[in-house]
Image (cartoon, rainbow, N blue to C red):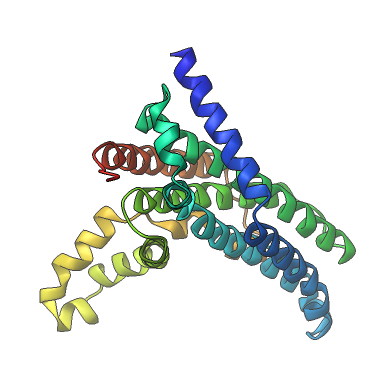
Length: 265
């Protein structure tokens, strides 16, 4: 068991080092930092009493958006690069099981996401301080929930990368992310007495399938609560983290099973 864990940690650390040297990753990080800092300029263009709201809203949005882009970009290339460089054959010829490879890759991806989230959150904190916005506990909760959301997106990317091409994996992952952000609205439409599912009842089974299968990513967005200064209890954060963990376990397990059966010839 220890040996297997060491192998996964080694793969994870190697994945992290590869990503840290990747030009696309560096470019996305720099771009996200610039956008977060640019919220200072944007805040100058609005009414004075709205400046604090702008830097709060924009900063959190860019942390989430940049994290999603990095998750998809890096995640869909994890397995493809190994296949393209033919290194997967030498790697799997060693005492490394295929599920260890997938789990190790995801672990490395998660380390990348932690780094991205922490760096961007620190930049956001600096912007908040420059705008005289007091740092509240809810900001840390918001960043933690963003990381939980990104962990699901990364798991989806790893799943598709285990059997598909990078382009298709990226399209599918972004598609699930967008659908995940709409799950709450679809649930409300299903309960409504008028609207799409009332005028077109044949679509109701599809709507129910989406809400049952796809993760509800809207639960990780507490931007409105921050702007309205509504307190978010730790119980809610804990439930959201548990929800995220359950999806990650399921998705990574499926990815490992699919990769186990993949033929590289």
